[in-house]
Image (cartoon, rainbow, N blue to C red; front, side, top):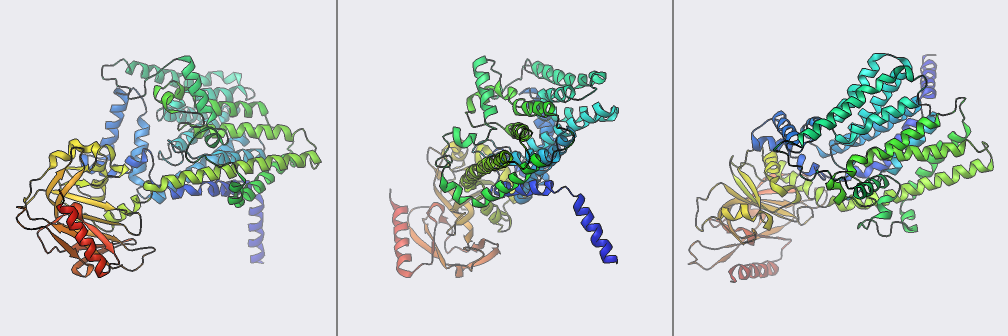
Length: 636
């Protein structure tokens, strides 16, 4: 009896459950799954080392946020204080890449859910609202550019969440008259406006909701605070541009009508289906539109077609007594598809960067507008066919196949983008971080030390200071790279030969760390010589710590030989090869991918640039390699 009662309650609950929500959510996760295969990208590449910045500058995240707010407000005339708070909070709390990507995907799902609820509040049937959210997930395109889903710490997802909640609260005020809903709506709009200037124009969204709500005129004054926020922030930004310290840094305004119109059009077009693949000459666009692509994505085709058919069939067959308010939905779709573009269009930076099919960050919000326009088109056609008739069947079949095909082509392009971005932003960065964190490659590095490293993208523009401070938990003096761009920094570090005491300068080398033949080495510098372009040509290092890749899936340690050359400081002795096997080293750490050794040298130091690791050596091969290495090091 009790079991029957429990079972009845469970079945009753499932019967009341909105099946559309998990269906669309599963589709969105299916399409967004490749996000988990990407690393820190775009601005995230540098912002992910925020904890290291605080160590390097000896400041707190609050100090850094306040400094950023001051600089962007008075030097760039951008009144966006909350974006810096959001950035610092995101990268301080979400340090693990998996949870960071999971949070971004969860925010996208939350956006879809609140948008679904808003559409139902505005008069759309549940089936029509679910179809729109299905299309939003389908229309998301990844790009080899500033992508709002792959990077930027969920900024656009937070902005859209605030915008939809503000619109929903405003509609509640217009239909119910309770002032607290208006206050909440204005507050949410103000928060979005203080985060990103693109939302200044979103008072027009509220105006659209106002114009399509019945009995609105008795509350016409409700629009005043939204307009006031936009006008005051715009005037304040214009005034800041007149101050002496103003330096736009690429955000200067160009009001040339032709250039502005073209840039706005590029931004709008980028949100439409297959625009990136069809309109750009990107390396990932070639050969996407083919039967081979369809054959490679049959699960996507089947899942997309089935989901679209279920939702469109429900729109056609399950007609509600109250017809959707098409005017309100259509206006909202147009505004969401267009409003994010104008402020992008007047910025000189984006006028130079954008091309057709390539949109800046607000393209994420435009996806929702374009999807709503397509939904209105399907809903309009569904209202003019006879349910269960031949025409209705054709509408369901053709529309479902079209949307499934879009999903297939987007999946192919998105997969190619992710494949390109895996190197080096996911691997070898995760391997490098693993050997630094769990492998303790730089364990014991003294405070105030200087590192001379082989450069990776996340070391650019002196951001390597923050990256290595973060992973050594030590306040370093600085990190310089062996490359031309850092010649001004690395050349003055030259250490005379024979300085056996040396200074707190370490050489860190990486060789193919993202492959099974990867290795890394760190050691104390006794001598450093660089070419005019900043590349390290000679180095003498001691106190070596060597990290060796273990092979695939924590395979056993492989036999190897470390080859190097010893050159006496006076040059009186003949340079001689040095060969060391793992049996002569002490194992210091073991991680999933690395075995780390402390190397005991038979000589005071070795030539650091001559180091070479030979896997699975045979005696003749090892001898030949040592001879070749010696000849290379002694050649003029």
